[in-house]
Image (tube, rainbow, N blue to C red; front, side):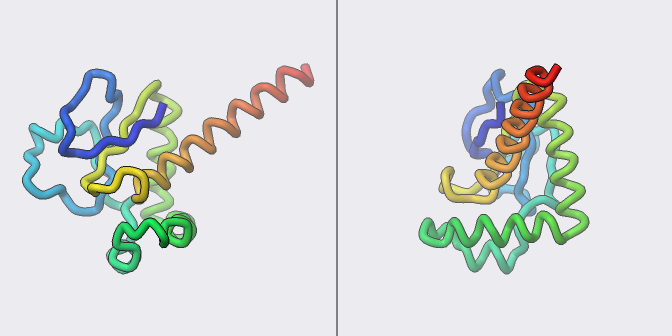
Length: 133
């Protein structure tokens, strides 16, 4: 399961592996309060893309496409995404932690969708492999 959670929300035992996916450390949060397992700062969108998007719901689809391009084209972002995929496969639950106020329209949501697509593809492959056996 891949959860989305604001860093300002209380930590829950059901959060699983807590991974901060923001480039910049969140304001007003201590490391103790954040209670993170990992920080993948390289995976965040570029400053230019983040400023252009500015959490405008009307721009979300375009933001999603541009962010996916960055994840594919930037070596550090691609490596960070691969690490995130490994953690997602290895852990039953991970929480993508972010600071944005908007939960539904942000880069963590894009990452969640990518990971869910990976899981769904894996399940489909497993089912088709079982049918052909």
